[in-house]
Image (cartoon, rainbow, N blue to C red):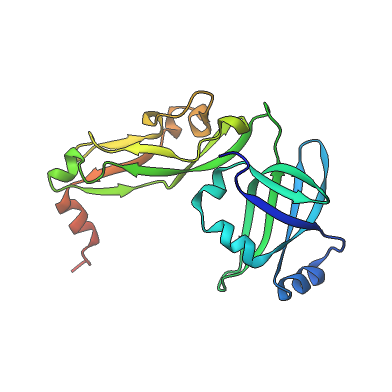
Length: 202
């Protein structure tokens, strides 16, 4: 649901790496909000609240509400920097959105009917080549996820980007660059092929 995720933020008055380190030590996350024909502004968010929100996969493919300075901004989460070895969010990028103006977002793929797939019933093994896909659409058309139906996929067959059913008004960006970018999303391999590829060389 559009705007169902709310991020409470404060304006960030200082800048620089030293200030960012100070904020992180205090349990805060430095962030920036940009785009939408307005100047970029620095933000500060509560780390624990951010982590809680990020537990939901949907937050990455929803229009969010950022509350700052007494107003609400519609935005998408455009970038997220995590610490390489610690469970710490280092920085966040929010991009403002406007109704009717197209945005580019990575939407997660949900694989359905794997257990009843024609190929799996024959002993095949499902492999996932992609976990998300970049789309372009207006904020109100943004899907939470895109389903990949594997029910009728047989052993040796693949599902490609062009096979995906997307809502009206949603464009898969890779397909705009020609048929050579029609990447495989998932495939069903023979169980024997999958086993041999996993076995160590003698």
